[in-house]
Length: 333
Image 1 (cartoon, one colour):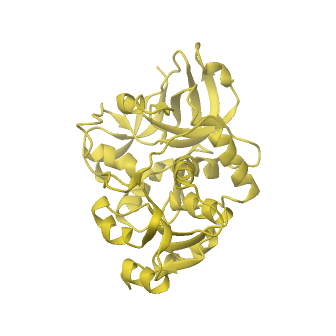
Image 2 (cartoon, helix red, strand yellow):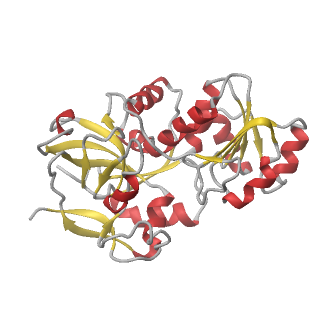
Image 3 (cartoon, helix red, strand yellow):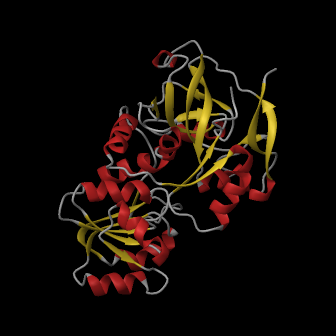
């Protein structure tokens, strides 16, 4: 049996339980493709699954390979529906979820592909899912891997908010991974973006397109935004705070405005929680926006696969702007 290197959890635990191990290389079954991974972007949710916080809803089987965002090269194609979209040698990128979430994924109108885990040398994906696409020439693998979760959260947010030029939106948690897509896409629509961020991240979020930055530690966000915008803002987009923190900030939104959230648990009430999802063609649009520069590169740290565990530790325990990417390029023939 062929093997590969992968970042693995052998049981529930924190980042200190992650190990780079030699594991069986996954094989493409019916309707699936096998991909040699060039780059994988890390997300805090990858580790949250391993902690067991969601084990009642998403029980994992071990050893569990981490990772969902990726870019790579198709190396094998299984028979069956959907697999004909791709051929060996195709450059692809996308978002997939661990196979453990199959029951949850099937509740979505456009379920994502399911995967064996992308922080690895190889992974297998369900080819028909709309959250997989060809990677165009000119879109480097690491940058492509950084896009799917961020952009496939940002696009549904923009659709839900029906944003238009001249509106003002407060983005809470603008310097994180999803903010790297939400801020520039809103700015491209002519929305005046007020971003919450630390002073050391101000240059970064302004580079994304934020018109104003609020230091959420030095001054209470609610009081500072109210001082600047006594009449309120047209929309609040929460990318970072627990839902219980939203009632005070929600008062900043003008009557009839938008209250959008991406953080669980869902706070309910007038707040609309938006899920990461993909429509057919969404990733092609994302790639085009990246090539045009509308979506600037958000990759702030790159690590080889051998450093994947420490990269996750920094992502979870440190302060990270943008996206962290692990690469396997140069390791494989």
